[in-house]
Amino acid sequence: MSVFDRAGDAHAVLSRARCLLTLEGEATAEHLLSAGFLFQRLAERLHADGLGTCPLGLTPTDRTVYALAVGAVDEEARRAPESPAEPPTLTEAVTAELACVLPEYMLPTGYRVLDALPLSANGKLAADRLPPVEFQGTYVAPATDTERALAEVWARVLDRPAGVIGTTDSFFAVGGNSLAAMKLVRLLQRDLGCELKLRDLYANDTIVKLAEHMGTAPAAAVREEGEL
Image 1 (cartoon, rainbow, N blue to C red):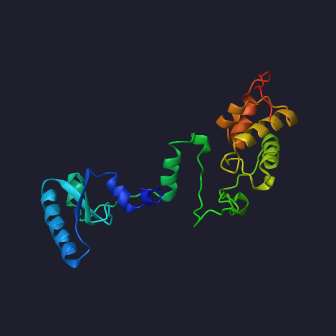
Image 2: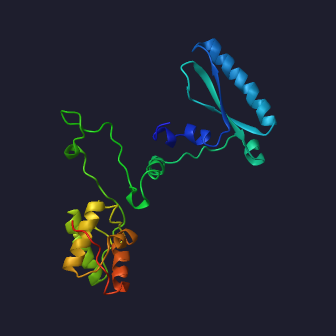
Image 3: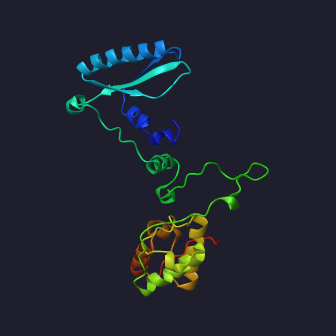
């Protein structure tokens, strides 16, 4: 099922079901009524044996006229008239999918759904025609000289006003990437005299955490090799 379908009730039910039963036939009133009647009788029998059922609006095959999910349920759920499917939100479904291929620090904190991606004349993604990214969150102003200095450097690297970058915002959540992280570390080393390593930024990805790290890091830290 697509990631959009995984945010629906059907996927939430199927993820907990033991099997999926389908009846095939023609999309006629006779077949539809017969399938509904048969599955109703079957559901009653399964419920008596402690198995829960849920009709699904799915068509796994071209000839499917009725689909029923079946799975074991506890006594409380079996006696209840209905149980909530509790599907994940689209954000949760997309994040779970991306978590299979991306490290945690690269996972987005928000998404925007588009009807279609803008394409150039040769069929490639036209990144310059994508809608602007809007970051929302609770703004926490810098409270120390170190935090204010870090906010100014972050703003230069991310090309954003320093007054909109909160001290609890993750560098990667507000537009940072691996290249920007390398540039940030280099600027902090050059302009603030901070002996930071790239992994220090990944482990301390907010201004608050990075300021605390800078205050506790040894003065004679060894620079990482490599220049941007």
